[in-house]
Length: 121
Image (tube, rainbow, N blue to C red):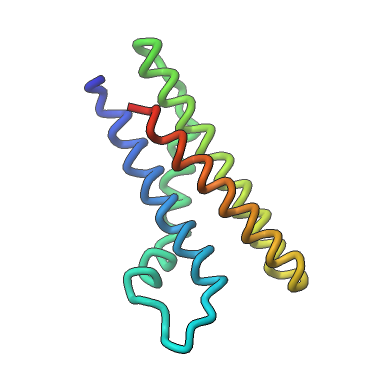
């Protein structure tokens, strides 16, 4: 498929996944040395990337069935990641057990979306 919308959604979704993954990794960081700068930079862009990706989810899709299916799938993935991040934020503000569960849940959703990305072309 050569639909520019798919390219735009994919870039936004991949950037969001990258920032969420970096955020989850930093929340578990226990090394003596500081986290790598690229990891911190990616996590630092999370709110910007989440906002940009979330704006895309309000669009209505028209076009070829395969294009609409891909766009709908990516839009749903963005919404799921947003919800998982919200749950993560609530979990890390609670206690240590909730924090660990929140990180695991966020990681699981990130993994699911990464696997789904392969099918959205």
